[in-house]
Length: 294
Image 1: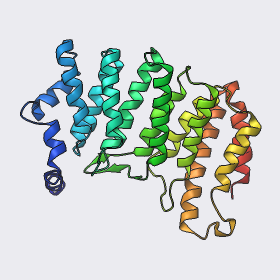
Image 2 (image 1 turned 60 degrees about the vertical axis):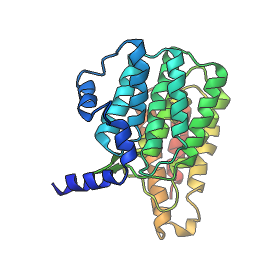
Image 3 (image 1 turned 90 degrees about the vertical axis):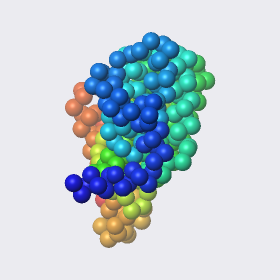
Image 4 (image 1 turned 180 degrees about the horizontal axis):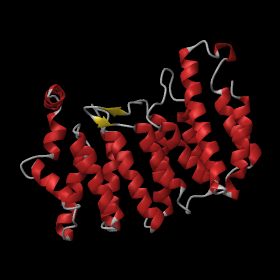
């Protein structure tokens, strides 16, 4: 009861997002029924209206509306291939804008990134973007990954934020796209590297290292680096831990080691268990890097 009361008070302080999602035109009950009906696809005339409303719901501090309605609804439509290229471009444009809009609760940007991963997936499966559009999406995804400084993951009232993980999901879908070339994939993995350690004073506890590893693993399957090049790339993560004199004597150093170790452990397990020949250069480099970890 107390938690429910806190949720009501919290939402009263940010009415615009909630009212914009659940309002007189789209009552909460109607949105929940929409989900219960499996987000059935209306005629084209109503489809854009439905997409627009679901996009608004991504900004709600209510996880039932944001995650359960906004994200799940858009994901369902995208995975059903229900949107034509014009509608996909309109959605993409709105989500790009959401990445830089005011985000008081810290939910709007990460959920824009998460839905953009689904938009990227549609282009991976059946290309509809031009090379220029795809390059622009990669650049925006990289900028978003680099910009994340809100490391909050799950909150019992607000639900998930998970900015780094959602950025990694977006980059993973791009890494899987055969249209990206080696130079683009190298740039993509370099963006991931910038978040592996995280900012000083933060230890990942919501599975972020595993999510960060995925785009790197898929890019590695494309043979973008030799074993020696991966050795340098991974070695820089160890160097990034900072002054060796601080080892096991400084909280920030310990947090950074925790994060880097989790990332390397995931890379090792996934590359080793996969049996994929294309991952052997990465796997060998990871083994050598783990041996150098203080």
